[in-house]
Length: 254
Image (cartoon, rainbow, N blue to C red; front, side, top):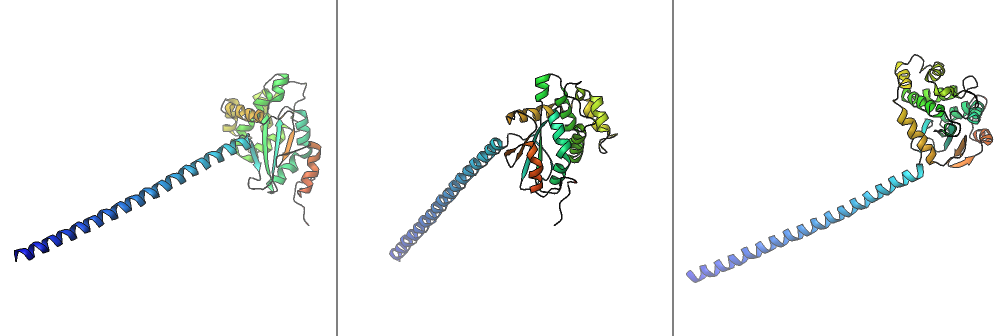
């Protein structure tokens, strides 16, 4: 009796030991699988992080012009970049000739229109009108993209654009506000008026000009269509090819 019980006890003990070993082995397999899974996730996370980092670097390298103002056509496939100086007489002539249809073509979604503002004339001739007018446009942009575009059009108009050899009128905030009264969204806009008279958009203008300088543009106006430089006199033909009516800026009907 005692011998049989002893034998059964030993067998039961062996079974418990075997079960415990299997249990431990199963835990070890699960632990190893978990470690492998975590390692894979970690590698993927590192790879993804590197990919995001590289993408950001590529974005920085490819743009160099983060401060450009998109006035219309943000979702369009094609892009037109216009590099200008607000005191530049050639820029004024360009805007007076094709500025309106250029803007309307973007509003129709034919292309994204991006405006870059520099201060070449401030540097070459002295004064602060280029930077100061850019600062006022920054305040207009805070109102709306349309206010920005309409105000820019007025600043370049034959009526308001100063002579190159004349006084630096754009350095005078009162003159800039006088021009802004011709823009419905800006007329009697106290917040805009306060921004023009104050220093709120000084940094915006400084960053915009630094961005312009970083693009290594040597003269204004410079126009690029999908990154390819186009001579200003060739822009009307390019716009016509895109289906923009140069007389009214409206899309042609076929």
